Amino acid sequence: MKLIDFGVREDEKKYIQEWSKTNNIEVKIVTDLLTPETVKMAQGYDGIVAYQQLPYDEKIFDTMNEFGIHVLSLRNVGVDNVPFEALKRNDIRLTNVPSYSPEAIAEYSVAGLMALLRNFKHMIRKVDQHDFRWAPDIGRELNQLTVGVAGTGRIGRAAIKIYQGFGAKVIAYDKFHNPEIEKQGLYVDDLDTLLKESDVVTLHIPSLGKGHTVINKDTIAEMKDNAIVVNSARGDLINTEELYDAVANGKLYGAVLDVYENEVGVFNTDLSDQEFSDKLLERVIKSNRIILTPHIAFYTTKAVKNMATVSLNSMVSELENGSSENEINLDK
Image 1 (cartoon, rainbow, N blue to C red):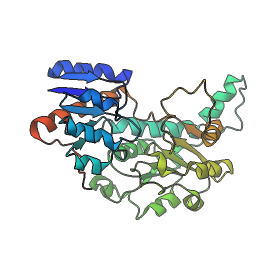
Image 2: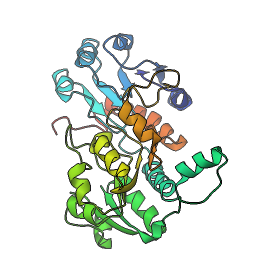
Image 3: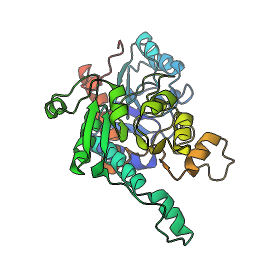
């Protein structure tokens, strides 16, 4: 068995190499993304592993079929950038890593919120300028707030435990109720209720599709004054311009954003020596009440190792058994 792994970052290499040695399976590491051009390097291999934020071109799968390669294993959760029809047309199975570390993302969301509540961003900027005055950066306490958790999958449930540990009141919404959360009586009937009753709204749900946002000017109008939005899920859940306006005009207290609807080509890229063309993102960065990070909520040693190894294990299961527990249903 020979596998090829595309879009590999430096921090992933050692885990892939360790897995290859332990399992005695050849894995070719490629730093380039998977494109109609680079897929040609996969000729002679049995399966392709990949990760990228850019869309996967349909031509990739035509070439895979020509090469007799019928499994693509992603090192990430999201599959919205993969054209399912092209996979089905070429008889290609798809796997992902559904849970590389729910705790990493949950911990990030709470850490970002705490930094915002205690005005770390503005205070650090002041101290950098040798301004050591306290005011006006008086903080708020999490134990005094109602946190609305939108989405009670693995990440949402991990977040609930942490927020409860701080003494916050927690409410939750999900179309599919988890028995453990149901037993605690945390669910509200709909997302609108969660938005209206929460001091903090933290998003842990998948993308709703292009143009379908959870946080926008209409929903913000229904939220509490001085509410906070935390998003470590998907950038397109929020209309960032309308969120920024609500923070700037004082309707919302602030936001913690680890994702952004136009992040592809920006996040995980060094643009320090280039003219920055995204004026909206520039305004977000300058705001003292918005904490922005470049999609790093997942970025821990545990998570990176799991992304590298679970994707490879799924590939082996697909090739040896014709299926794996992480195979995606392409008909959904």
